[in-house]
Length: 431
Length: 83
Figure 1 (cartoon, helix red, strand yellow):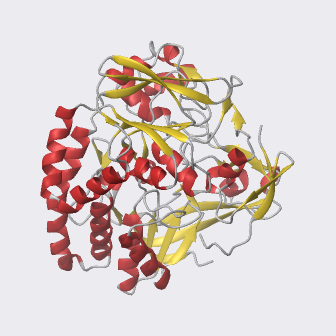
Figure 2 (cartoon, helix red, strand yellow; figure 1 turned 120 degrees about the vertical axis):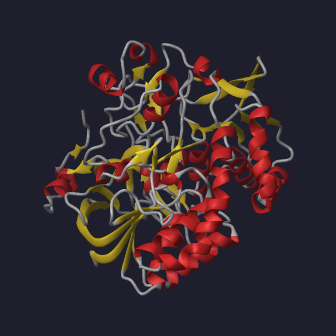
């Protein structure tokens, strides 16, 4: 496997694909690292019908000279210009060091998942989580699904699941009508997005779309049986097979932070050419602001042109990006969490699922670090990726202190040796 | 997913499961009627994020523990064990 490149791109979602293809088409040697089995990221995940833009970009990627390192995850950067990566190969873990001159980070985002009684029951999943499972072969035909949370992803997920034969019983949006007004105004300025929304709603026309509606609790013995929803103060029990619950998105900034990129309000700060505070590192897509596919594609292309020394040619793209950025702030306002979801969780509700830490034990803690030291909150294998978004909402704590390994890794990878994975243990729990 | 591909047979906790190529191990575990892990307090857990972030779907695959089953595609004769 080739391990030295002029440009390494991390993440093969829309931003990463656009960046890698654009850089390769400029004649640069490009390595594209991604931890999923196939390119596309979350929004263009394989295993279902994809929009034309997705098929086009993935085709261009396949026809390009980009070296695709699919199934590899980055766990460390021991020095500038080097990333350490690993992947599982049946009974072995392979590891490698990638060397590069320029780095483009397109690490995407994850769902914000919020705790409520019963959210740890099997078959309660993230909204994108259930969608990914279905794309990964989980049969959904005839299953009763409740989609709840906040953000445009709910509608996209509901539309896809309906198409696959699911009975989507309700789409529950925690935001109020009033909160949605600025987003509607932005949509009116972007006919493409408006049209997409109209199509999603048409495909889910048999499903009620409820505003001001949140999950209160989920019930079941060994798996989900029903969910209690509260709409405008009135509660209702709804029996279902799956509860798909997502509260908008949280950017994956762990790798940018580890490298030392400056963040602003939780997002990677960049200039117009997508360069971060580090001279040889650019960033594109959701880590710079949650804006969706179109902005991610623009940013990926701009970042690649800039690192290839063609920044002057990117003026048109930069102008388009500026125009589209209005959507980012409108979206974050529309998806702003009301205080109501705090009422769903009680002292007995698990917040940290890795270590089974209850909400009640976190109330007296002063912050993230204090909570980690006293309760083990965020100390399990996910390293706070799930509960971090929850405690940020519940207590306003900022999740700090990213350190290597970014994911639990095999001892053999950490040591740089070729030990068998069966003989090694995972390391990655950090204080 | 091309239709002409033949199903794959793997085992989950010893029971044979037949899936189409491209199916993740996490989906195969649910198809087999299993869940993925027991939590620190002994709660039964299943997949949550579907994208390799949450570690709720970790299982043992061919003897290697702590594999995120949502990130691994099924292959013939794979042996999956859940806790």
